[in-house]
Image 1 (cartoon, rainbow, N blue to C red):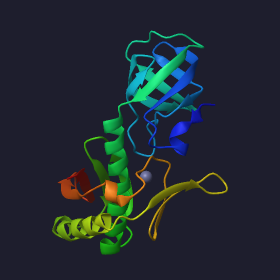
Image 2 (cartoon, protein in one colour):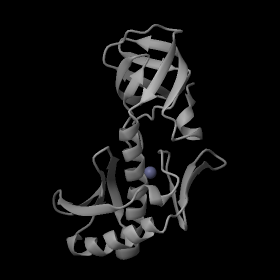
Image 3 (cartoon, rainbow, N blue to C red):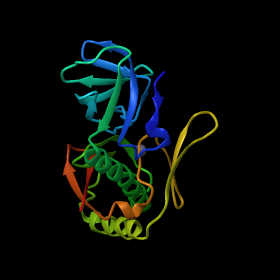
Image 4 (cartoon, helix red, strand yellow):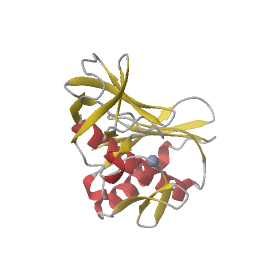
Length: 208
Ligand SMILES: [Zn+2]
C-alpha cells in the first residue's frame, strides 16, 4: 500500500517516489504527498515525473494519481510536486469549515449535516433545516473570525483503532483531511447562505 506522506507532513510540497503500477492514465506510487479525494476534500493536482496530475482518488485502499498524458513507466523513480498554492488554500478552507461548523452548532444546536465539500474556491456545509439562517451568519462569521485571529493550535492525530481526530482548542472532530497548524494561517473568512431547496440550508465559506 502507498505510504501516505501527507499524514506525517501535510506541508510536503515535493517528494521522490517509485512508480508501482500503471493502468492507462492511472498511476500508483510507493509513497505520495498527493491527497486523494475523500471526506469532501478535493483530490490534489500537480506533477508526477513531469506528467500533469489532474486528480487524485482512492480506488479501494489504493491511492491513484490520474495523469493527463502518461509518459512514465513502472519502476521509474519520479520527482513529484503538488500544486501547492491550491492545496494550501484547501487546507485553510478545510480547517475553517470545522470552526464554522462548531460555531454554527453553538448558535443553532446540533443539526443534521447532509453534505460538505472543500475545493480551492470555497468550502460548503449543507444542513437539513427548516429555517432560514441568513440573519445569523454575520454573528457566526464574527465569532469565527475572532477565534481565528486568536491563533489557536490545530492538531490531527490517529486514535487507537485508527480513527483520525482533528483538535483545536476545545473543538474535536473526526477527520482524515489535511489541515493548517494554526488558525492564524487562515487570516479570515466570510460566510454566505445559499438556497438549495426547501428544508436545506447551505453555508459557503470563502477566505478573505
Ligand atoms: Zn474534515
